[in-house]
Length: 283
Image 1 (cartoon, rainbow, N blue to C red):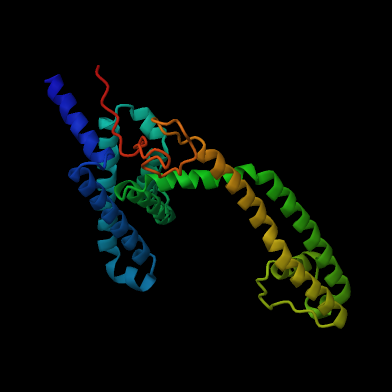
Image 2 (spheres, rainbow, N blue to C red):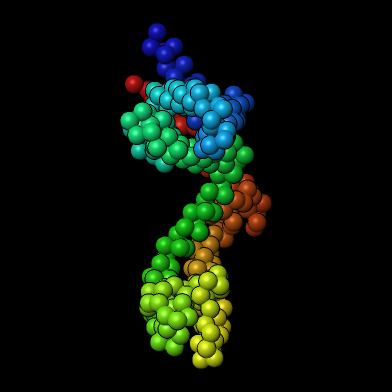
């Protein structure tokens, strides 16, 4: 009896957590369709004209989707070899957060619209389309951002000083009669100008003010290139170091792309870490 239970548990695990079987693909596709439909219901429910006619239907649908996602979450906990690890993982936390808003809405009605967090669950489509390797590339980008955080922080600190200086200058030059009623208001103008957004709600009227504004605009174009160069340099370094980690098991040479399937030197097949299903631990 225990053996049959373990077999059922493992089969359920393969279907729910794996995508190498047809049943697993169908399950994930149906799950994503359900997520999109529940989001559509949530978005339509926020439109007052539609809500007035279909509020009861939307509420019933929301309860129905919440029950489905709750059952799915409990099944994942049951069939997972390590339920605690799943519950603490990224997808485990997202799966839990996807069902909590509806239960919280019973006490706090406004919390129901937090169900939009279900959109994050659509990330599971990466597993269905065999795009896990692109998640690895996103990790490279994330590490590049983290490595360049000090340089970017120094850059933004310098920009903050510049916008304060230009804002103070415009406050002195233009004054309240031209809309620059305070230094914070003038700093807002400097931020909008130096980022080349240019809302046009505050515009210098004097010749000297326009000259300062011109310098600010030209400086804005040159400033935009600085963080791009910093992050690009770190990204290039991270990609080169990541290539060195992909080593051919036959000729032992590295320098391969993270998604390479075959060695570019000897043609041997490289190890593929995707689509592996962790076997159920024997008790």
